[in-house]
Amino acid sequence: MTDKIKALEAEVAAYLITDAATREAFRLKFLAKKGEIMPLFDEFKSLPNEEKRVVGALLNKLKTAAEERFKSSESLSAKAESVDGFDFSRPAVSSFSGSLHPLNQVRSQLIDVFSRLGFEIATGPEIEDDWHNFTALNMPEDHPARDMQDTFFVQTDPAVVLRTHTSPVQIRTMLAQQPPIRIIAPGRVYRCDSDATHSPVFHQIEGLYIAKDVSFADLKQVLFTFVKEIFGEGLGIRFRPSFFPFTEPSAEMDIEWIKNGESSWMEILGCGMIDPNVLRNCGIDPEEYSGYAFGLGVERIAMLKYGIRDIRLFYENDVRFLSQFESGTV
Ligand code: PHE
Image 1: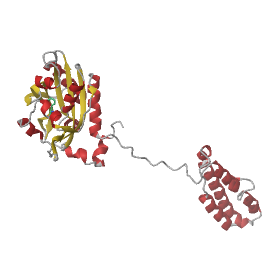
Image 2 (image 1 turned 180 degrees about the horizontal axis):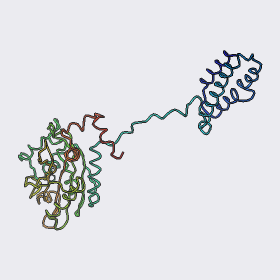
Image 3 (image 1 turned 90 degrees about the horizontal axis):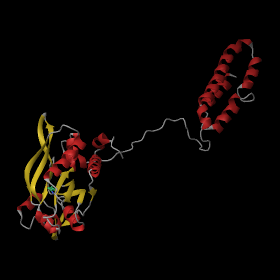
Image 4 (image 1 turned 120 degrees about the horizontal axis):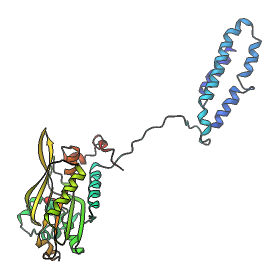
């Protein structure tokens, strides 16, 4: 009888309970009056007294084990009954859900800020022609400012370039619609330049506003608002006089950041009042309308916002880097 009890004990432990049906089968086999265990108690009564003590203890242990297995599988009886062999009580495996790339997170935040200020989104091609990328922006052939743009040319046709900035979208928009114009143009741009703060492919957001009596004060107001929205209050901002052929006057805007414990400045955008020549190139009368434009670097802003020292980290797709930005909405 001891052998039988031991065998049943092993059977109880190994019995697969996966749903309400197998649980009921377990009950009938082991716990019911006519199951495998209860009749053993009758047999037990006829044992000689000296065996009773040992067998009694084993038998009680077996019964308790069967009852406990039955009880611990209680939750299964409420679950789906049709999936065979699936253990519903197994803990779930947690999964990695991914997140938006930090550059896309910053791009969305920027678009959100400018949208609230009334700017609409405009787009243009990344493979551009010379006229839209340079000439119409007041940079005729042989103009020295072209050299600063580190242009990628298409070898078979030097009049086709990978756009070096989002400014050609200004031209395309002005040609397509009359003022008032208020657009931003987010997009990819290309320059033959590569180090810790420059990438041959990077992202800009162009801004353009043309209406009657637009002034430099309007431009500053919009840029101050954007910095406050993205970085919060109290950050050092400075405007430096600069030169762009398509704006007059022109400025560059720097934002303060801490580098090796010391405060320094990072250039994040170029801006200025649209040069009258550019308006004329696009059929807009500079006597009637004026406007401003700005072009900001998305990578630079993301670097400042998150304290990233090397622009190349954005493009290496290292999950250890990217997973630090998981809180961003997908
Ligand atoms: N297109 C310029 C650049 O990429 C930035 C700029 C845009 C400057 C608009 C003035 C106005 O360097």
